[in-house]
Image 1 (cartoon, rainbow, N blue to C red):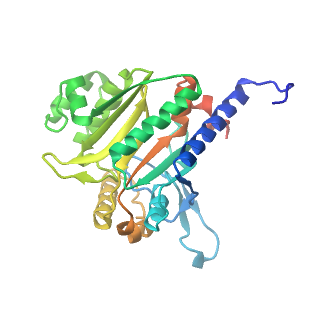
Image 2 (image 1 turned 90 degrees about the vertical axis):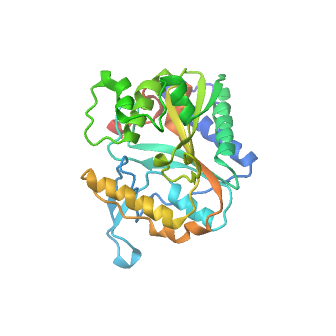
Length: 323
């Protein structure tokens, strides 16, 4: 390093991100996981009713494709198309966009790390995700204890509630102090609120908490394991009170996936939101995707934890308000 270079807090911020990127790339190179790059603009949008996408018009020749394009909210769909084409274990580290998500802890443009392991279970991927986060903590001289708990047991242990069988009024009771307007809220909404308002804020800062095997109604893009009750094979990983990663045993049934996309759009209609174009490119090849597990991890959230800050602007070169 140039001896005359003054290392300002701003430069330290940039260096911290660069060091994390180098660590991530070395981590996956050692494990023979291929780094890939996929489109940021897509003809399909994210149907999730809890996520809003940015749209961009295309002014070129109509033969080039759809006039309306969507900025990706994650690289999930194109990565799955690569898996279906035989690419094997792969990851992408890149920018994603979510409309309306701006504040102290959110930026509409942020960085996501997403990777897939062919032939792995979500439990195996859960362990690898823990190892990656532990490696990032070691980079700044820190360690964390690890707690791994099933979703149902976690609710029983912490709130004395069975999330699969409790009545909605029982789920609402611990949230009474927040005066939440109940109109339109489903059982899963109340369960999510219990996590974000009652459980998550109490997680110790130097603990990695992993919750796995969710109610089938919260499957998202995960497989559902038959049983009594059936469970969605997915996990969420937290570092302290921050949710860092969301992983799945990936669904590769195109008929079921189409039904879930359509269900999302039905909920969007109910909420007065625009229906989103379904990703037909993904559905056309999803049946060829090998059994695999995948996970997405928010880079800014991890950087915030490493820097011990609650403000996302502290880990960005330029936050949205100054972009």
